[in-house]
Image (cartoon, rainbow, N blue to C red; front, side, top):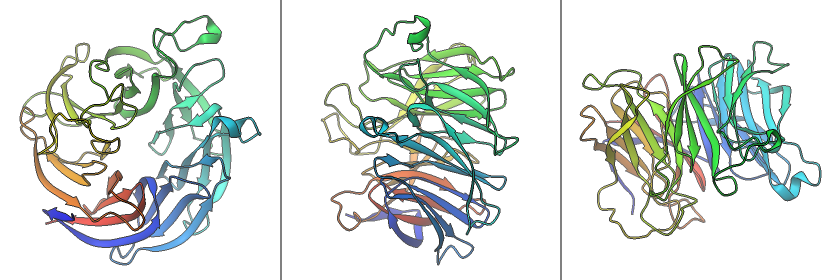
Length: 370
């Protein structure tokens, strides 16, 4: 049943289900989950009346469910299913000129190995990506320089020891359980989620030679994989804190939904989990996948952290008292047409404070804090 507290809907934009949304200036870019829908470009100059101005399609057998935009550039991923790789579909990262948002112009297609690039971040110059590469098992971490966006250049890479099979390494895990999900930069550090391998902190003072600072892996005993490692860019009660979201998919066994961790990284060589947040009313009973935590907003500007929480919609979690995180607002809409449940997949907050929430099934909600 729909419910809201502390949030009000400004607009709803009807579109195919999405994996990610980003707003740059007066334009929203929405990456979709399923072909042929690739990326929608939406004018949000008047956020009460969003208007599509361009759309990109992708071939069947691929998807392009992640997007980032900055400095007149739009980056989208391209993943291909294994069976479709065999028929020649290529995967990687596409770079577009969007100085005219209504007319995206492709500048480059950086081709990876395997299934392609999964999630990534982009600061307007460097892209921090999670490609599959020939000779490695599972996605690794890579930095691309887009100083010349038509000619992306690899700057550096890092992988978890055991991934480089072509180099004689042997993984200690099964299949692709340990793989890079996505890196987030703060200063000269990358905070990299590594799926059932937990997270790692990398020193990128020398971008060509990323160095491991530390890591932490709690899966197992916890059953869900690590999706996002998000550094809070200011101290909380004198401590440096990392927010870590596990994703409510790929469970090691049936069990309760995933949740949000708070990790003390004041001594970054010894990360210590010290608190967590779970939606009230969730007990320890097994639940279907896509019920629990997924993705916090990546650009943190206050102690209120909007988090896309799959079937529980959007939850705004205040971490001002980091030992006692608490929900201060939420937005749970009715399920979109044709879907039994809400699936809030990603969230972005623009410079005015408006909150954009994309549903994995269908539709984009634009919200304001009240």
